[in-house]
Structures are given as C-alpha cells and as structure tokens.
Image 1 (spheres, protein in one colour):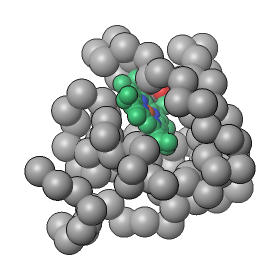
Image 2 (spheres, rainbow, N blue to C red; image 1 turned 90 degrees about the vertical axis):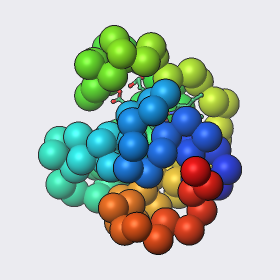
Image 3 (spheres, protein in one colour; image 1 turned 30 degrees about the vertical axis):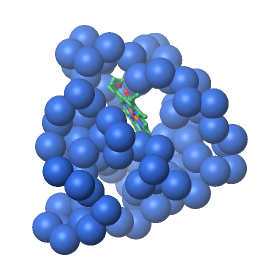
Image 4 (cartoon, rainbow, N blue to C red; image 1 turned 60 degrees about the horizontal axis):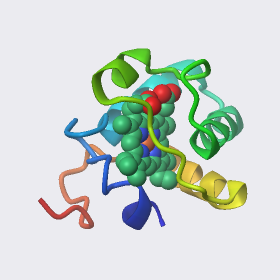
Length: 98
Ligand code: HEC
C-alpha cells in the first residue's frame, strides 16, 4: 500500500517532487518518540493535509501542500506504522525503481 501510493511522490531517501521519506520520518520522530503518537498524528495529517498542522512548513513552501488522497483512516494508520517500523536508509529498498 505504501509502495503503490506514497512512493510515487516520496522517494525513500531523495527529495525530488516531495520530501524524502527519511526526511519527513525524521521530522515526525523528533516530534513524537512514541509510536502511537507518531502513527496517529501522521495518519490524521495525511487524511486531510493542512498547512496549519504541518510539521514541514518549509516543504510546503518548496513543493506546495500535499494533495488529499482520499484514503481510509485505518489504512493510513497501517501505512504510517509501516513507515515507523521500516529503515528507509537501507540501500536495498527493493521496491523503488529509479
Ligand atoms: C501527489 C504526490 C504525493 C503523494 C501521492 C503523497 N504525498 Fe506526502 N507529501 C507530498 C508533498 C508535496 C509534501 C510536502 C508538502 C507538505 O508537507 O504538505 C508531502 C508531505 C508529506 C508529509 C509531511 C507532512 C507535514 O507535516 O507537512 C507526510 C507525513 C507525508 N507526505 C506522508 C505521505 C504518505 C503516508 C503518503 C501515502 C499514503 C503520501 N504522503 C503520498 C506529496 C505527496
């Protein structure tokens, strides 16, 4: 789900048309050490992206606000848990096609 839906815009480690996954993950990790808080805040944000609650105002200025994708909240939580658990800095992130 993450692979099909998020990496079209978010490369694991490179900032191209949107911030890299490692970049927004680090931002959220710094704000929320706790997994539940991390997942809950991120899933809520991705459900309805808003500038006011963004942790990345610099990214919005650079790339514009992320569009609303219309995903179900439960699915977003699963995706955000996956983001929390996965080490995207590993070189063999097999799903990314350059
Ligand atoms: C159509 C392109 C696009 C897709 C698809 C996309 N994003 Fe984004 N996303 C962006 C852009 C551009 C930004 C940077 C601007 C911003 O923060 O709104 C961003 C920012 C973010 C942020 C930082 C939020 C903040 O605090 O500002 C998170 C977290 C995020 N995306 C998660 C996801 C997840 C999870 C998915 C898949 C379910 C996803 N994105 C799919 C374009 C996309």
